[in-house]
Image (cartoon, rainbow, N blue to C red; front, side, top):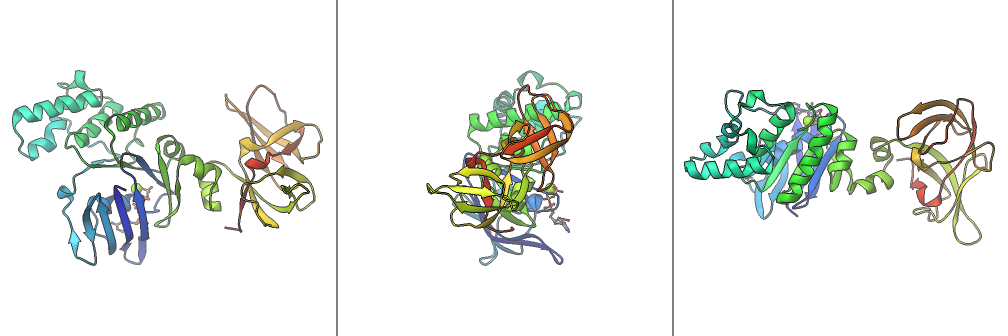
Length: 357
Ligand SMILES: Nc1ncnc2c1ncn2[C@@H]1O[C@H](COP(=O)(O)OP(=O)(O)OP(=O)(O)O)[C@@H](O)[C@H]1O
Ligand SMILES: [Mg+2]
């Protein structure tokens, strides 16, 4: 475990921006801190960086304690050997690309030849070798962001902190830069803490996602775990779209389960991951998990209210006896408003919550 945060609290007046947070981030991985605005993501990074002094708790990077309120340890930011990349690229417009990347090394007063070599190597890593002598002002947004990544890498940090580094870029460039960061991370085996509030960015970049709410981590794990096996309703609704409704679970003859609606209609039967002994549960179905049959059938009857074609899929808003549902279909079948459908779901795609969380 490369970064270990234990019992960390940071309050601003009466507000606990970080609330007794204990969490570990793994070496050589991208850990994504995800959550709504104001949930404490930036504050967590700033505490790790030493830019914010926590009220209590401890922070360990590798075997190094950089903060411990009990023992009075508080290592200076520049001694923590971290690299940071922020939303604003903060490149120096009057310097060349190479000049920007050399800045942190000049500050360390390294020999000129050593600086030149490291700048050259780092520009190679971020794919800017041929732009070295260009004025930073003349670069595109994506290139400027790469300069700030290079400036962070050149100091050879043991940990890289990135706070929404892509949110100033346009949609296409964001997706491109995601790939670049992923590839770069794999090439150099860096440990990255990456803050975003964009769920798609979080899922495509993160080895692990840490979903924050009110200064705490609600759930952590690989993206697919959070998406398909959320432990709380908050997670289900934050990551992707979720249909939620109550079902009654009862065993059937061969030891499997039947999920029935309050009205008695059976929407699924078979082995459900977490049905155990529950009689009554909150059920989550992802929009793409609904199996759709046209006409009337044995499943949940649904009437199409709205059809949106989004290229690779169709999003249907349907009315059902348990309220409106969102259904996503792939493939060529067309749907029209007022079509009558029957919805069911494979048992392994039924997700049940223990209680009304
Ligand atoms: N210097 C400060 N003084 C007072 N309150 C602060 C300060 N910094 C942060 N806060 C408050 O702490 C809470 C957490 O802020 P933080 O910046 O960590 O959120 P965030 O998750 O990064 O949000 P965003 O997605 O909007 O960047 C917020 O309610 C914020 O208003
Ligand atoms: Mg922030």
